[in-house]
Image 1 (tube, helix red, strand yellow):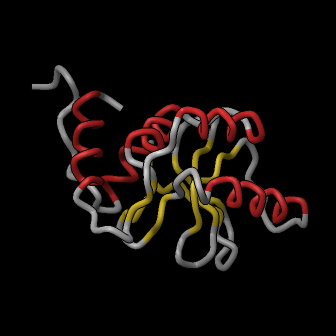
Image 2: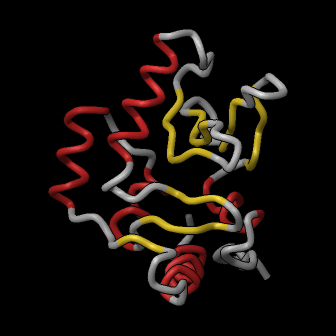
Image 3: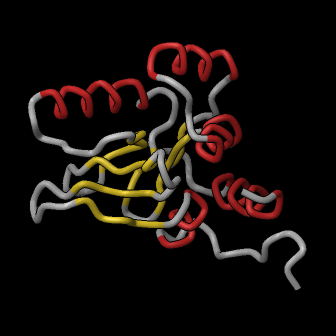
Length: 145
């Protein structure tokens, strides 16, 4: 994300009501998570460190407290044949119980729909997801006129 986008995300997140957001992660918490589950995509890592987690539209983005369980649950589902996503970093579950997160090959946000089937692209990147879900309004990129 650009600095302007980061500012917009932080400002929008900060005004969420209590109960609709979780506390930011510490660098130590992030490193502990990464030692078990691997690297966190950079935009999401910034979000965890500066915002935490919380409501975006009708969905919840995991904070560092929920994230390990999400990764364990996803891996268990994958081992049991419920998920076909590969090279995927989950950040939460939608209202239908479908995992959503980063396609690590493209940085796009995708979900795997177990009701209707298929893998669906939700957004081209994390910032676009936050915009589509209504947390923030799109800001101009640095240098755009």
